[in-house]
Each structure stands twice: as structure tokens, then as C-alpha cells.
Length: 65
Image (tube, rainbow, N blue to C red; front, top):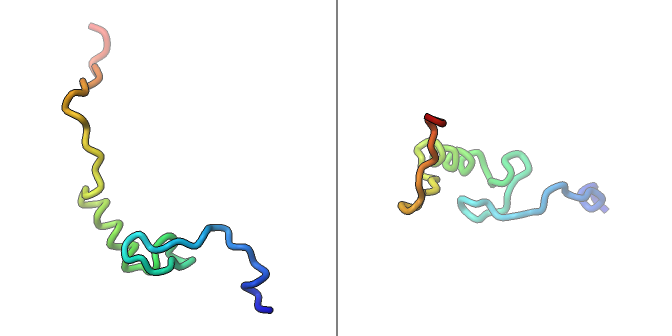
């Protein structure tokens, strides 16, 4: 019986969100530093955006007049 058989993982195993390979403990939830850096680059470029609906009114930020 190995040490890994006795240890319960704190996080569930899941595939890397970038490439689908099994995630690594050091770079969780990614499989490698490369996939982690790809995701960070997308965040920094603004590729992950939740767009607003056109029919929504913007809140009044000026306060009472």
C-alpha cells in the first residue's frame, strides 16, 4: 500500500480547463504552468468578458441633485 492510497485529496481531480489533461497539484486546476499562463494571458487581454444587455439602464452614479 502506497502513501497515496492513504491520503484523501483536498480537491477533486478534474481535467485542465485549457487542454483537458489531468490537473496537477502544483498548478491546480491546470495541468502545467504553460496552461496556467495561457489562461492568465486571456484574462489580461480581456478575452473573458461578460457583456451587458443593451436594454439595461446604467445606475445613476452622480447621486441626488
